[in-house]
Length: 284
Image 1 (cartoon, helix red, strand yellow):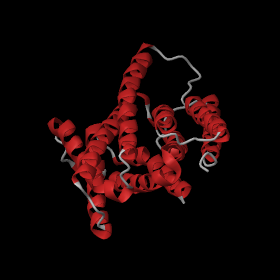
Image 2: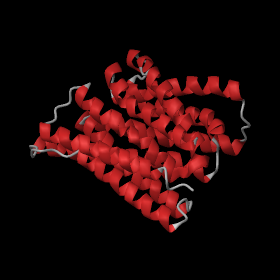
Image 3: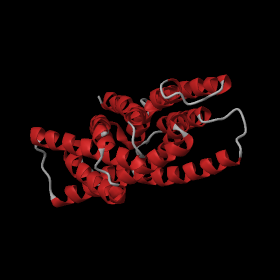
């Protein structure tokens, strides 16, 4: 069941950037709108499930949510410089490396030699696929190089935020239903503080409530999968949604790619799928 939860996350998260780009707004409005949607989702879910919350769970959830805002806000910012079809694969590879490192070294989630071998091959396949989807067939000009540096800087900050948001929940063993409301509160607070000077209450923020609802669905299924199949496997499987984002950026958003680059993208997606399937076998 844990694998199914993680794959639902992949579908939800793989469509977020595409939906947000279609809805419009700058990265401040997009991030703030997502947190509004997430907060609404979490309030409804809380009253339905009514999980037990104590001060530790609430604080950890808020901190996790704030780190998520750092991750999401900077990913949206990096998209402005490099586009969806390039940023999402790179972001995926970096997040996979970070979360898997914690999952294996800190939480000892791969115990047998077979799990370790399969896991390493799977992660290498996913990262190779992510890099393959971001290749360019032609050298860029000086402006392209500057944009790449700026986009990569935002992406590094984004990765730190995303990895911490997942790891801290696993570290303190907070389950999905407990975390969902405190996380959303932390997300809302973080987004409000970071975007307050940019007048976040606008039509684009309200439109992006939809992306918050989509994200929340994926977030809940990820958190439910963590105790069942572990952080390394669950997070890696959840990131196979890169296929939706990458191909959608090219064919739905019209991001320009040469025929050779499209072949690289498709090949990269195949590697990612293969890696994701292999990760399903790393949990005994």
